[in-house]
Length: 249
Ligand code: ADP
Ligand code: MG
Image 1 (tube, protein in one colour):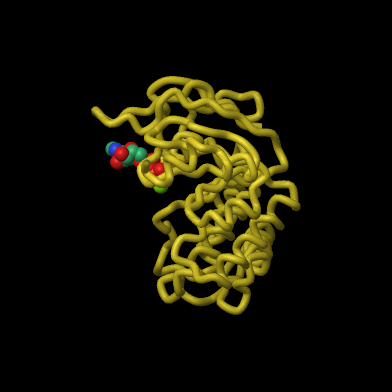
Image 2 (cartoon, helix red, strand yellow):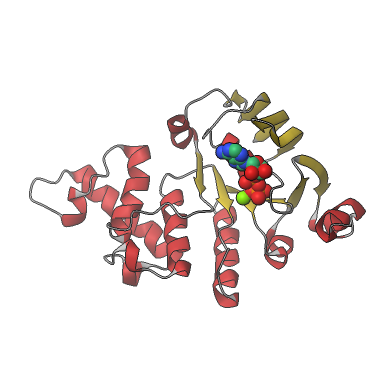
């Protein structure tokens, strides 16, 4: 599904990713872990075409995507959430999800949320579709609340619903569980497993090791921009290079 080939990214003198290669098949939850500054978000930014690699190639379903514009990603089937939340605070929950869906359908106008006279059938269907994803993440009781009034845990669910609304084949989640309490984290990992079981491949950057180790089928480890390990949770947990990177020895 995804192949990252010899990817390097530099920002001025900073080497954020150095000659990183990995690939994975569809139908899995794949983890990308590593200490702060390891280059995880930079890798996600390149896979979602926020910016191109300095060197190397990224191939998604046999197609090179590393020179494509950002807005080509949702139609291709790649969607993401951001480490720093990107919701529209002055819009309601359902409006936020419709904006996400709009990227794909081009019919999800906000007028449909108000069900104004003259609203086209496909707009109503965009609204109904948004409500499906809101229900899926468990925000149905808050659908008409302003996003700006939501607590962090609910905002993360909203980001997830919005990313799902483009019906991605590959979903990138950048620290989706950051700041969540134990119960919320457990609910989030259940949701991620459900998304994978529904047929979407999920690529997660996550600091919560319990979460990563319990849900990932495969894990890739970065340290100071370089890939230092790749394997099953069990292999990663016992990998000496990984242990050293995390303990800073
Ligand atoms: P992680 O997500 O693993 O914590 P990042 O990918 O955010 O790491 O950062 C890796 C390195 O690249 C850091 O040194 C960071 O300061 C640098 N970096 C990331 N994005 C940018 C950017 N847009 N401009 C300049 N430097 C950046
Ligand atoms: Mg990051």
